[in-house]
Length: 276
Ligand SMILES: [Zn+2]
Image (cartoon, rainbow, N blue to C red; front, side):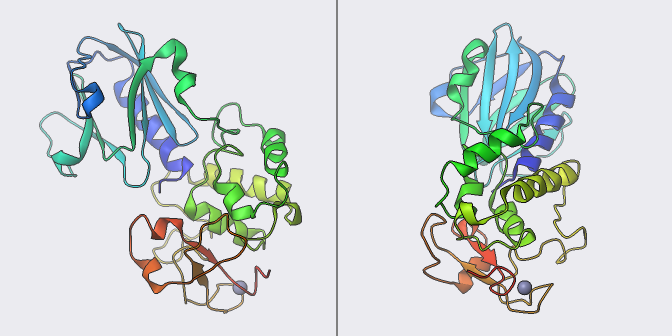
C-alpha cells in the first residue's frame, strides 16, 4: 500500500516530466475509457491529494484521476525504452515528445471535467503533504470518534490523508500507543506532528525510514519485523491480521511476512513498549 509520501513524489515526477507538453497519444486500457483519445491535449500539471493523483489537461479541460491502491505505480520512460512492468498491467499510457508515462495496476482510472474534479474525490481530511495542511482540523476530526482504535483512525483518510499501513504501525510505536487503544487515550498532537514529520522527511526519497536509518532491515521499528526483537526493549514484535477497527487483535499469523493484500492490512506492535 503506497503511503502518501510515495504518491506525493509520483505527482512531482509526473508534473516535472509532462507539464507544458502536448500529448501525442493516449491509451486508456480500462473499459469505460477505451475509446477516449486525448491526443492534442496540453498537460497542465499533476498534483496529489492525499493518496489520489490528479493530472490536468486543457483542450479539453479534463482531469485524469488515478489511485495507486495496493500495487499501482506510475513509470516514466524515454521513447523506445523497455517498460519495467508487464504491458498487460498498464492501465494508462500518456505519450509526449520526450516522455511516455505509464500507469500500471492502478486502482482507479477516471476522467472528469476539471471544473468538477473535486466531486470524484472522497471526503479527505487534511493532506499531510498538501499545501493546505491543517493540523487543528486533523486533530478535530480524529477526536470526533474518541472510542475508535487509534490505528484504524490513522488509516482513515477522512481524518487526515496520507497514512498507509507502514506509517500506521510505525507512528503508534513512535508515540508508545497500542494500535487498539482508543483515540481518547493517545497524545494526538504528538502523534499528528510525528506523522507530518516522517512523511516530510521521506517525501524526497524512494526509501522510507522511521528510525532515521536508511540501511536495509533497519528502516522500521516494528513494520514487517514480526517475531524480531523490539529495537528498544528486545520483546518480540507482534503482528495481527485483525480488522483494525475491531476492539482487539483476534489472530496472529506467520503468513503476514508474505507480500500481498492480506499482509498489507497487518498491524505490527511491541507488546511491551505499546501495552494495552
Ligand atoms: Zn519494545
